[in-house]
Length: 300
Ligand code: NAP
Image 1 (cartoon, rainbow, N blue to C red):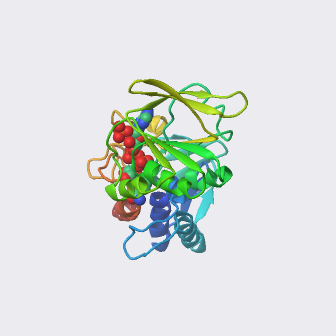
Image 2: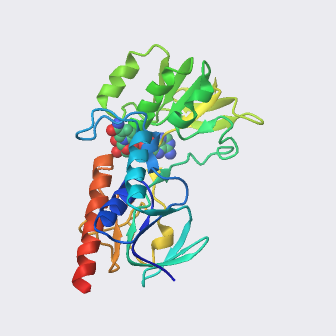
């Protein structure tokens, strides 16, 4: 059996920080990740609100953290976790592992509009990541949907690449920071379409236009790309045998670290919390690892 002191599920900032702390405490650590390391932060063009770091790209932050973990001998395997048992056995699509403690740091995934042709057009005009795909739209026309910080940042980022950017939001007011809203209002090539929702995606083999439902009726807008930035959702249904979820699917924890199952901890965006930021993710990761180590040694 592949036995570890700590198995971390998820290689985002919370999971990698948990691994870093556990490795520095000389524990045998396995990190399981379904896609690629870094989590959501790799999509941030620049991080300027992390204390002590003036400015760093999200990609570089994730790369540095990954290097810290691998330099200490941390093992990261790219496997999809299918089940975590109460006895702390972890079943993946490739293997079976046992951890004395498990830290769930599964983060969140992009929320979808759930309209026709959305999945068909992914990579053919529809994207959830402006910093990943923005470069494909040089001097083209794009739309961004959403009213949070991600949508505002995406619109600003894309306005330096695309010729025109439509920012479509379902309300009058933005949820994101006012500094971004001010910058957007000063950009000549960003056009606000407020109190509006996207009704359909049009095109045959690729996205050609979107139909927007707004006050006064529908409007068809010709676009080459649509960036959907309407928030994220957790994906924790497979863990319901060992954790409780709230109505939105986030993992419940009374103290922000423990779950309902002894030896299974939670960290990062995937838990119920008030602030989902890089700072709170790494804080969660360090606390989960330290708590797990302390409780392991008390039991020994
Ligand atoms: P968010 O803050 O949850 O905003 C999601 C936006 O999408 C909201 O404006 C929401 O509208 C809209 N929306 C949700 N579902 C929709 C639907 N089905 N159709 C149309 N619109 C929909 O998500 P986010 O912008 O991705 O940000 C997530 C977290 O990361 C936030 O805490 C944010 O502050 C943080 N973040 C921080 C930074 C930074 O500090 N630089 C950068 C990016 C993200 P309503 O407003 O009407 O609900």
